[in-house]
Image (cartoon, rainbow, N blue to C red; front, top):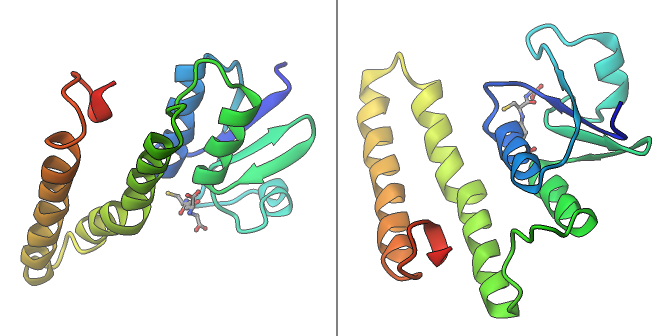
Length: 151
Ligand SMILES: N[C@@H](CCC(=O)N[C@@H](CS)C(=O)NCC(=O)O)C(=O)O
């Protein structure tokens, strides 16, 4: 069994973020899906906040998707997923923060309020604004490559 384990939940965007990182880096991990609707006792013992994703590496745990991904970037440096230049690296981190602080909360509201049509019109306006910000500040200004940030 690989010495790195990922505890995940397939519908969790935070867990997907770590899974994508592992796939891109070719990290061979043991994957465990956690039933978040019926958390097993072993999970409550392992995870301080009960949230996925969580990584166990050589017997020690790391959690919080963004921190896990930083850890993976340090421990498995190839292929590098952050730019080498410090300013470009800072810009990449600004976009990671944008996802956490602005984009995902707006997406979450859209999902959580799906039965409430009145709130949904506000939510749709908000997510549109967030997508336009990505399009204007990110895709238009940060390079011409086929993918985000000219990569
Ligand atoms: N800030 C955390 C958020 C993780 C999170 O909210 N995970 C949700 C699933 S998408 C979870 O595990 N929820 C279970 C719970 O809160 O008990 C991260 O980035 O890892």
